[in-house]
Every structure is written in C-alpha cells, then in structure tokens.
Length: 80
Image (cartoon, rainbow, N blue to C red; front, top):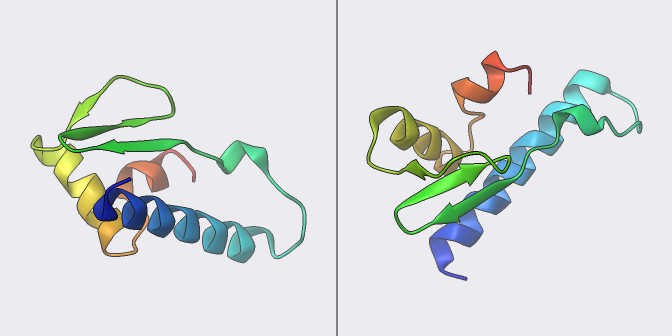
C-alpha cells in the first residue's frame, strides 16, 4: 500500500469516528454512517460506486478535504 493511500484511509476513518461520537455521544454503532473508500493512484471508489478520476475538480476537492482531516462536503450533504 502506498503511503498516501494509507494516510487518506486513516484520516477518513478518524473523521467518521469522531463525527459519529460527537453526533451520537453514545456507544451505539450506527451502521448507516459507514462508508467504504478505496483510493488508487489516479482516483478512488466510494461505496462500491463508479471509479472517480482524481483530476476532476469535485473529486480533487473530496480527496483534498480527506487529506486535511476534514469531512468532505459531499458526505456532509449526504448525512455522514
């Protein structure tokens, strides 16, 4: 696994866990808020959807937010 891929996945996992803790403030695990992100050299796949090119502006913004430790706006709009 390349270093960037590991960092992006770890950051996204941490973001989601912190948001769930803040939102729920309980030990109940809400499976609705789980996502799967697979990052490749030239893009990524979110929740088994289509491949998304890293160079498209909306996809670049998504990965940039993840790298900064932020929840991407796309996920916020979807209720994650």
